Length: 165
Image (cartoon, rainbow, N blue to C red; front, top):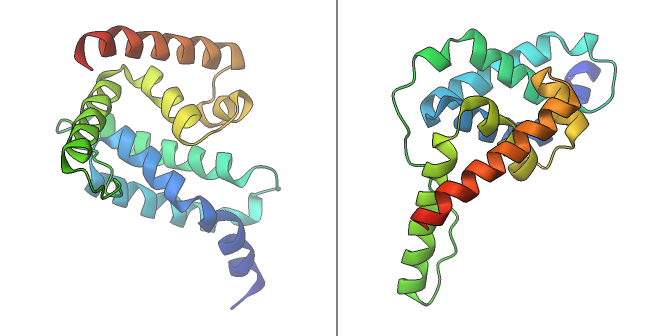
């Protein structure tokens, strides 16, 4: 295995789950997310010689976002598919597990209904744990815009969750 491939695998592959998570939320389709991530990783590998270090996660997520945009996924949405967490704890209490799964599905639906620019920053911050600076890099927006979108996303989520959860 050549040195370039080893460096790529060491720096990019640890962020594969984050790339898939973002692609799934953006595309709202697990199948489309698979295609987006595959395309993004291929593009990342081809452009790896131009990567000058820094935060590989933000770099990969930026490529995922660009692949999603260039694929026209925003205009081809087929609706929200359930984003259930496959790893919900198998509890001894089936009723508690069912309640938790139902709550998770409702929360997923509420997040999916957020406007795209709010949903994107919320996913990057709360699920991918990126800093404001990293989110600004990924989305290509100023940090102040990231902060205001995140605050608005949280407020919208609180408002709608009050009535639903």
